[in-house]
Length: 215
Ligand SMILES: [Zn+2]
Image (cartoon, rainbow, N blue to C red; front, side, top):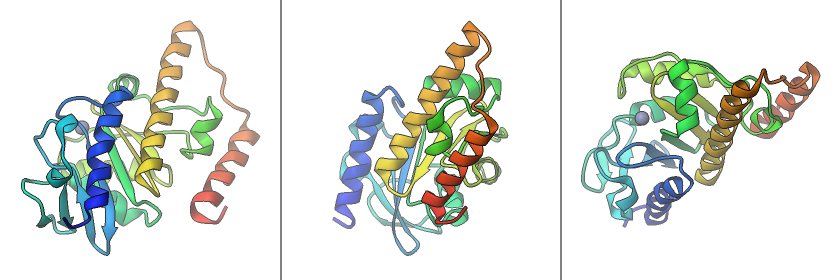
């Protein structure tokens, strides 16, 4: 099977996301850059926790399927737009976690209230403007709001995280959801304080250096 290891990783990742409470049912999509212009992508319209490695597709940049049966996720357009904009990204995860969903429904981004939000995600985190699922417009909005960061909220929809590896992209989705949960609870109890500006600047610099090798 072409890219068998990567396809197994993608199939397993959905079960992990479900165990972690970050995604359910038919929702969500995952892709990994497999080679020059070739990607491993989850299929559309399949129960994600039942995904087998052979159900994960190998797809070219133009959307044509190289190996596997079925249609690539409708959000592959968005994944592709992220890969084109970000050479540092090799894996993209889109899911519908609850607390990220709360902020996405409110169309409220994440202020730098936690260190990990800046250090690992390059935050503050923005909300991509609303566009219907599977559209080029959504792809453009996501890339714009993502910028040089590793996570973004999608208005009235969910969340997207990326990374150098699938492992990192999943961890980043976890950081995003935890920060969203902290934001929701802390707003219920009061007004959260933001990190000092100098700390945000320093941690953003560390993030950019680690990610792109420059400040
Ligand atoms: Zn979605």
